[in-house]
Length: 72
View 1 (cartoon, rainbow, N blue to C red):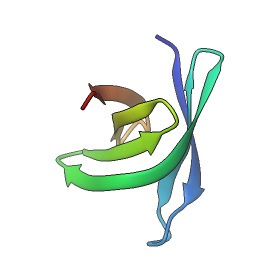
View 2 (cartoon, rainbow, N blue to C red):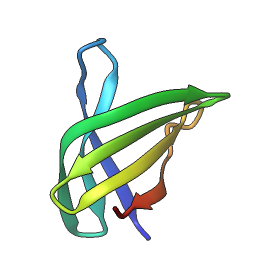
View 3 (spheres, one colour):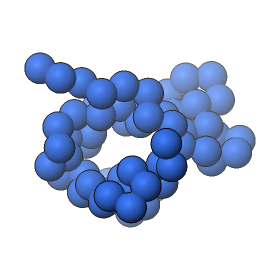
View 4 (cartoon, rainbow, N blue to C red):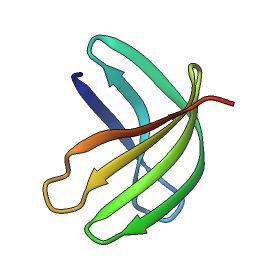
């Protein structure tokens, strides 16, 4: 899957996801539910118009991955 993430500067002056592209489909991030750090990675749980997703970004390469789709 072709995944791209657009970012805005968040409240802590760090880049945070604002739009997720799944191929040519644009999904707006309505809010960030949670964020956490790991060794060489960073995660965001985001609420979108489609539902909840967990995104992961590799610190070194800046590559984004869809880590989870949360269905409640």
